[in-house]
Image (tube, rainbow, N blue to C red; front, side, top):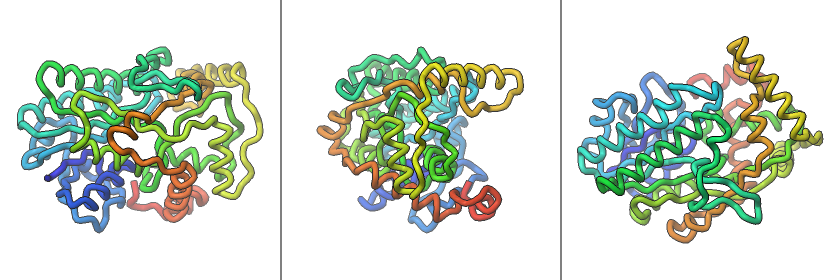
Amino acid sequence: MKVLVTGADGMLGSYIVRELLQRDFAVRALLQPARHTGTLDGLAIEACEGDVLVRADVLRAIDGCDAVIHTVASTDIWPARSRATWQLNYDAVVQLGEALLERGLSKLVHIGSANSFGPGPRHAAGTEESPYTDGRFGLDYQDSKYAAQQWLLQQHRERGLPVSIINPTFMFGAYDSKPGSGSMIIAVAQQKTPGYTRGGKSYVHARDVAVTAVNALTAGRNGRCYLAAGENLSYREAFRLIAEIADVAPPRLYLPPLLTLCVGALGSLAASVSGRKPRISLPMARLANTDCYYSNQRAVGELDMPTSSLRDAVLEAYSWLREHGYLEAEGARSAATQGLR
């Protein structure tokens, strides 16, 4: 079986490619033109440059493939409302789904977001049956991912689109060349995190998500979503774990909800005037005070999802970031990471 992986050189995509190769799948990687992260160097893949927003590129990429794992997405939450976010998270998914139906491929595994389901506290973590509630935050990232998921499920019901959806929570791992989630590790390691807020998240090893996505190629039920969740930790607990691995003091200052909301409101106001991305916006502050916990029971039971410890995920991420210069001073890091972005 030949599998096309979109966004193959991103953090999750890099793990997915390696998992596919380990199982002797043929891999075609759809890569953004003129972008080189170095995360796939030396791997036996067929590289294909193209834009997921260009129909001809998508058709050329999927021709000759049996299945697609789609990882491309914008996770930007600033600006809160962004047409570019909708183009990448919704328009590209629609175009890929239509192309898949046109060419008659056997499977699409779409990487969605856990945010497409309502979260819960630890004792009642969100599941695939929890209705979407993140519309209240006013962020196109969450709204566009949810809309794309709904479109895919509708196409399955109405046109038989063979799609399974993997909904990861907050991922840590190697190959984070942007960096994305690694920014949290860098901030704590460099002691630039001022404190912790009331809320928390579900954290998962990106490798576990990759294994689950590859398992879904053959074991995933069409028209079904799977929350790829991990350990549910408060921000205080997560920061402590990162600090322990980085061998630094953890953030000790508690930032109460009212304070963070006021700072977020001021950040959003200042950004609306200056046009610069705020360190914290009002939606970010609201999220930081929310318990965003999820259950992986379905993914473990139906897709044999691994459950690596968060410590292993953070250690792997931290080691990769350190090896590639992301934990050095800015000037040194820029020189050390030439070609990684």
